[in-house]
Image 1 (cartoon, one colour):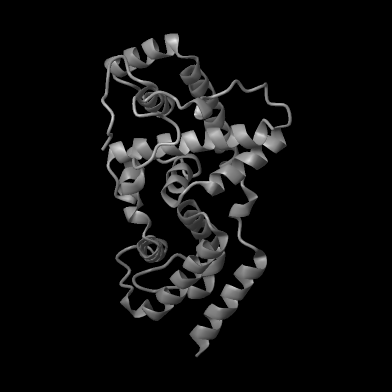
Image 2: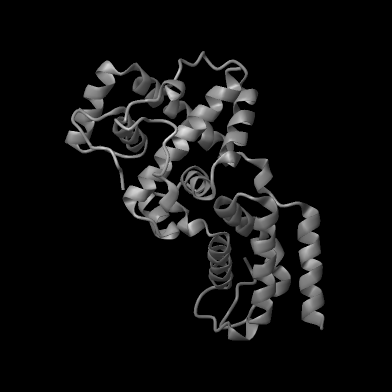
Length: 184
Length: 89
């Protein structure tokens, strides 16, 4: 870290080596799609170049770039309409009946002791990818970035009760997806 | 938001939500008591709780060591090229 930025100077030639990996990981935790995450990071660098004259050095170069990336991610959520998909959560319940009991076909079955670990992980990965956008987002922020629930609520602009509903849903889906695909 | 009534002790839907909370933080006394009571007589929710723990641990393992989260060197090289071209314009 010999070349830190001082008062309003940027070193764009260093951006990729300094920040690309971190930023990509950050974006992947939020959009879960390689191509989209790459595009967001690339767009961040390009927009930053264009508005480089607006950099005043009030924040570090890294934080300034990260703020641009965060805005890109929010725009992406907006475009995809992912922010509004919360409303659909309670519409239909594949897991529980109207009294809140397990539906027969969804009730958890006993699992054998895990034999082939790699197979279990492979299926789990596929099941995570099948979750909807917000479901993936809460799982990634929780287990990849190890954020606290309050931080996740803040970042996704959701209430604590929404958070628990999303987590609960995500866990139910992962469990049933694993049971269907791994036990067979 | 929920359409069904929240009874006592909690139904499976509410109990599994409490189980999910329990995986991540401390429950209040009432929540802990309700969940514990429900688990006494419900084998499905006991399984959900146990399997939920397995899934949480495996998810953490998986995501923390996910090689798909690294960028290709080629992509980075391209970006460096694009950036230096823009600067030199």
